Image (cartoon, rainbow, N blue to C red; front, side, top):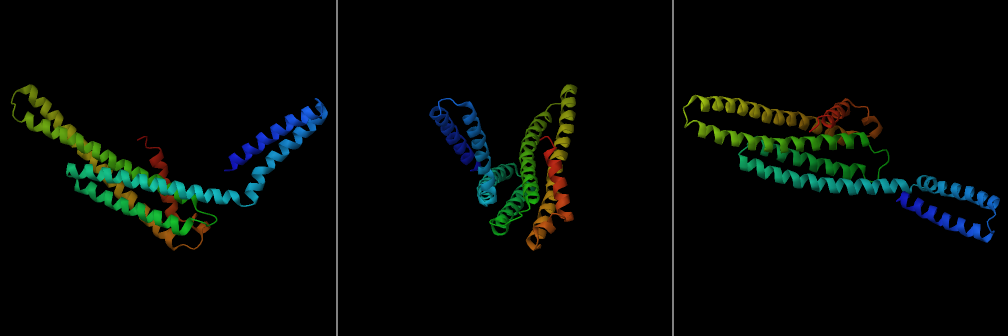
Length: 237
């Protein structure tokens, strides 16, 4: 919003500057002085906007709109992932989508009840928690992809059982190794998510009970959550 108002002020100042130049028949000194005054006037627009408190209102509206949009997008993606995990028969993955959905809903409720319209919102917590949530969703998406690869390997494995020559046996052994690796990868995603859920729940409980947001920024739980968020950002997946 402030960018829009500043742009409008700049356009009006330019029009007035051109009119001033024409009115004084190209007097460069007068036009230069007027140009300096115009620039100063334009710069006062964002300053007045902020000091008058309008920027805080914009920040709150932006937070509400972004949170509502991300909340719906994440819930929709989890529903899709849950359906795919169910088709693959991965019960632990299905359970985790339900747990994560509940965590996201609780987070959304906390943002609505504790943060909207409040000063000194703990943006570090909001950003870190959301990053960890998205990383957990990506882990579940990777579980789906890994589950499909395991299913493909299992199908090939059953076909290879019907063949007894040495070449096919080598392929069979290689597929067994690949399947073991994929199963270990899948279990790794699920185990990491359990750790992420613990940290998300722990920090959510703390922020629900704490009185001062400034005190919260110094809690150990937040430090651990921020560390997980940094790991998620650097995961490269």
